[in-house]
Image 1 (cartoon, rainbow, N blue to C red):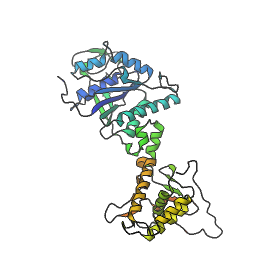
Image 2: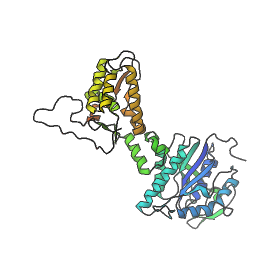
Image 3: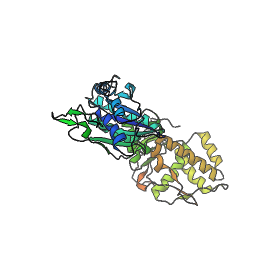
Image 4: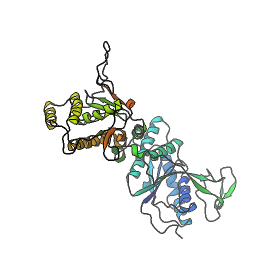
Length: 401
């Protein structure tokens, strides 16, 4: 009798790393679909392995003899599961050819990037649910697979390690507990009946860092080192550096240019954060605010802009800044920050306080804000006599927009 008659709405995929012991595939399916209640029956299986591991998997799991994958489904009344030669994903080496084994640092880097990309692709599909097994393969492969799931995994995805009772563990002749008597020779030379074996899963909790990756990494090909660096930036303490002269900022460990008006608005709130000043109300919607215009233009003129653009900005704010001007500029700043930083942009967005009346601020501690254009953060006064503050401009390798 089939274990499950109602097909789940999500496509279930079992992803595993294997080496010279392809049994982890059948053991994991048994633990998921037979040993646990309710069962989790995969719709498809994908394995990541080396060239030698792929050959082992094909010979032992696929085909008619010994055909242990087909036997597992038949013995335990499981429905068809997609698994064939195309489901075996072989790690390519530095030259693009399949790696027979992972032996060098270059091989290791290739394995990390390949595993990372496979997990990214599978989790990018909103119609999938992933169960990842790190029971097989070299330890580094299991580590990379678990780490990749932490980087890209969603709340519904799972991570586990399969546990096999003694004396069946590491026995070449053992693939899963059979519902009938089958006597095999164990690794110590003794005999044991596979009907008496116990196979279970140890589920491994993981911290999802997906929210710390920008859209480029979630939607495009991702190198392992890039994804790790992006997640690290999102988790690091927020720190903002503004170089008005160069028109550049450094935030979440990333340096980039901002359009002059956006940089000026960010500088308004960054300076207030550095000074410990209270939040500001937005300018009135239909009544231009002269104080807001002066505050903004002081930063804007320090940033600098093309003469024609500067004239237009001054003309637009001649009577003051109104709420619409503020709202449009704030939205464009937030859009740019999110494009540049992804989820790591959150601490650098102008916060509205969450309650009415709205009062706006940059929620960074004073020590996390720094101006690098010859003025100390939070101070507009000249340095003491005899003391020179040397600006530390950020690099200007990227042209200003």
